[in-house]
Length: 204
Image (cartoon, rainbow, N blue to C red):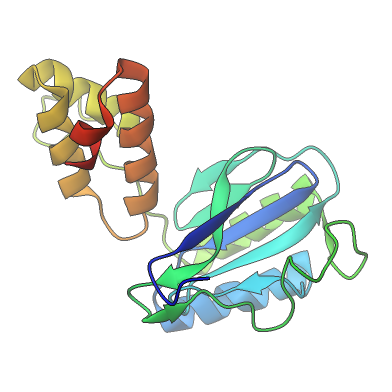
């Protein structure tokens, strides 16, 4: 393991539910932590990157689909998250204060079981105290065209508008705000792969 600049991601298999609480405001993060403990249960698998943000791992009690409800993200059956690595902003590695996936089996009964009903209740209660963050939207357009866009939709729109994927990708990456940067980067990379954009262009 290098001392810095390394990263290891875990795929969110269908048997687990990864709850990413991408909340930077201390009081809101504390409230989210209490709600998660009360509604979803206390899990020994909590990962901390740049505190007070955290990722909590649970067992899946029924089919649960991945959803991005910024600043809440739910991964189950699709997606991935950083489990180990160097967090540049925190100036230290990602940590698991209690237990980690290296020493707890994914089907261990020490990990609480989460159902869709519990997740719905948790998200409803969470957004009473933590404001939602929207994905990038089209600004300054006439009424009827300024509705919310996904990152991919905005990238496609800018590519058509400017006639250049590279310019559009640079604009989308430049617009990315705290809490959306990873999603934006993955969307740009996936778009490049689908268009056959060479790796050196993507890196640039």
